[in-house]
Structure formats: C-alpha cells, structure tokens
Image (cartoon, rainbow, N blue to C red; front, side):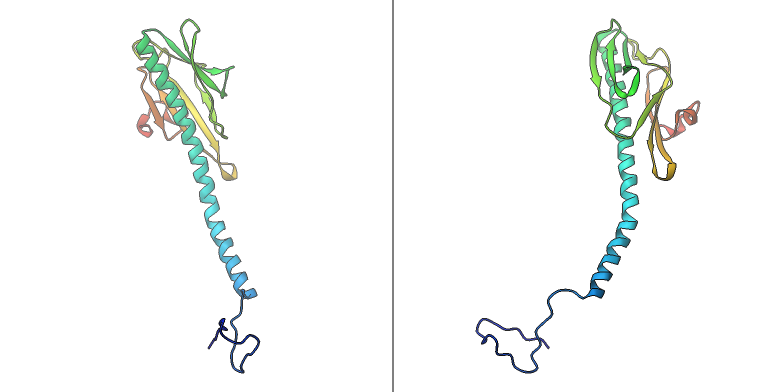
Length: 180
C-alpha cells in the first residue's frame, strides 16, 4: 500500500511502514519497451518503403499520362499535329509538348524520384483527330528492395487511346488485358 505526502503533511516526518512510490522505470521494463519498438520497426519499415516506391511509380505514371492527355487535347483543339518529346533527348529530364512548327506549348519536369522512364519511340505525335502517327509504349520502373523492380507502362495505341498497364511494354504487346 502506498501513501503520498501532501502539502499538509509534515515534511521529513515519515512513519514506519509508509513506502513512497518509485519514480522511473526498471531496467527490465526499459528492455521490454525497446524490444517491442524494434519488433514494430522491423515489421513496419519494409511496408513503408514499399509504399514509398509505389507512390513514386504512380506519381511518374500520372505525370506521363497527364502530359499525353494535354498533348492530345491541344492537337484536337488547335487542329494541328502536336508532339510530346523528351527534354534534351532524355525522358529523365522531363518532356515538352510542341506544335508541329516547333513552338513549345508546355514543358513538364520529370518527377523527382528514382523512377526511370523509357519509350519505344523517340517522341509521340498526336494528329488533329487525336490519333498518333506511331503506337508508343512508356516503361516506368522504380528500383525495389533486394534488386527487384516495380514497374508499370503507359500504352498509346494507334487511335491515341492512353492505357495505364500493370506490366512492362514487352508483356503488354498484343495483350492489353493488364491495362485499364
């Protein structure tokens, strides 16, 4: 049984049998708490890293789809061909939307992440009807843990339809059941 000293109790006059409560934690309690924390981190951190990689991948996919949609819309609106091309020939630096005559409409910065973007064509050209000159596919990879990659692709068919796929361009070729 614990008793507390109150303001009204005479300081320094402790009676026999009264035990003051301990303040702090014991070494065993501290070690148990640290062990529980380590186990929670060991279980949670890999999931958090995977979620971060997935978010990087989706951000990059959405940026590519957004640029393609913008280029297609401008081609239809203006009634001319519009080209989506990599900045300085490198998709990792971003991409630009240009009119047929070379006038730049908009430049998109590549999302700052570990994602890599590669396309089957050097550029995507939308005609005034919204179709493309050549079907194109973009492979987007994010390095995963233990040497594995997570990947998606963005497929543009000859009609100009943009599909986001849960596989690489090689897997999607001819079979768009993995796309939405």
